[in-house]
Image (tube, rainbow over all chains, first blue to last red):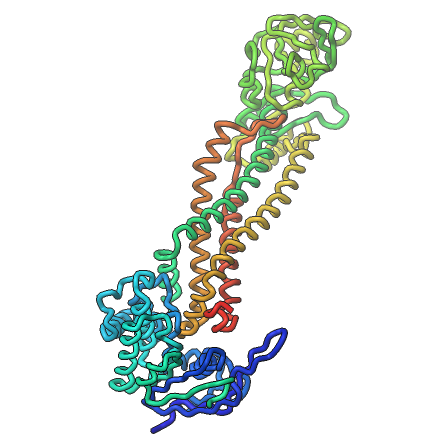
Length: 222
Length: 400
């Protein structure tokens, strides 16, 4: 299988006035197309930091990340943003929806960067149908449950048809039923739509959904 | 077609539609109050300046003042000159005034005041003294022994300069006018109060009475004052007067305003300083309010960046939002100013010793202040939005 993400000797240091913390210490990793990779580890092990680097939401101190054969270390912020917009989807633990926008508007927003609002809206309806939220698409985030908000966030991450989705503990704030629903969506996206999924989790029982899993400790893969 | 270009407007619309209504109301209200404050300070000082200037024109000098040429005591050919002046375009009133170096005496109190001989009808076309009678009546053309006194001459309880006045002279009582070592008895026909101290220290008799006292002065006068129509320019009228070779020196009211000119200029200087301070306060207030509003949306800005919305779109959406705040604020401020404050001050003028002050705002001042508020608002939106879009995305999202 072709590698869609390659991380090579990745180092990330958090600098503060009192000390420097090495959050990632020479992490190297290859993720193949169509994989469902789960990253586990204790709090502070560096798993979310790794996800942020791989999704180009943060800048690492040294090493290299190659996404779809493209080196990213020297990309301008604009090009990184373009890559995120067109090729990567990201799901936050706290859903990160815009409170003033309805479920539909939240989902169509990234697509409005690339196409007409009519096309964006049609696609958003389709994807909300897929995550079983067609009926509630005009509701504001505050009018949705946690599980529903997370499904809106998933729909938003899918709107520009990315080939890779990153999810940072997407079920951490959900009850078991909602968690299962979210994981089933991921499974379906991975199996049916061949989307590569990289997910951070704390829950051992969720590992069953993964095709591979890695564990981090003190910023290293163990 | 991509909707990227419409995205800032789309986002602004959603913020306005679904954002917290209290935040919107409070922000707009504070912008409105800052704008009203700017308008109020300026219009109050403009009102004082305008009121003072109008008092000078309407009670003393007219718009244009003609004095005898250097070395001469009188302007000759009064009748011909007055008729010539009346024929000039823009002139709506001409009054010849003869000044008497006289002394007034009342119940053993006497003093020197400016006594002017006028044609009452002519004078009423230039000054508003005839409308300012607080007791008795104004002079009539053929009155040969009547006099009207300014309140500061008549005196009485509560009069500012009572100590130096006739201390309570009343309508119907007699005063002696001592002139050329001769004493003439006049009856007080009325007392006027213009609120302008210099004007209220004048007394008037008719031209008829003056001619009786001094027949040899026929067809001469000390000064001629001229009223110019509001829609005519004083300088244009002055050059027309100069073209007619009038026998006298022609001045604008500003040149003969004396001390009041300095007072008026001082108010103008204070107005400039207060306007500057007002703009500074308005700028700081508006900046803080909008800055706090946008800084509170730091997480939202981070999320927008994370999902691929370009920074210029995010910044522009907040600039538009701030512009909307300012437009609504300016409209609300304008409504408060013109619908509440201005009518209130017309009904209850601010009383100062020179005049009653109403708010006066000219179009240029209004537009300049509205523009200042709008620019400040736009920068108040631009700066924090630009700062937040430059901070690390994750720091913005995770509130670090």
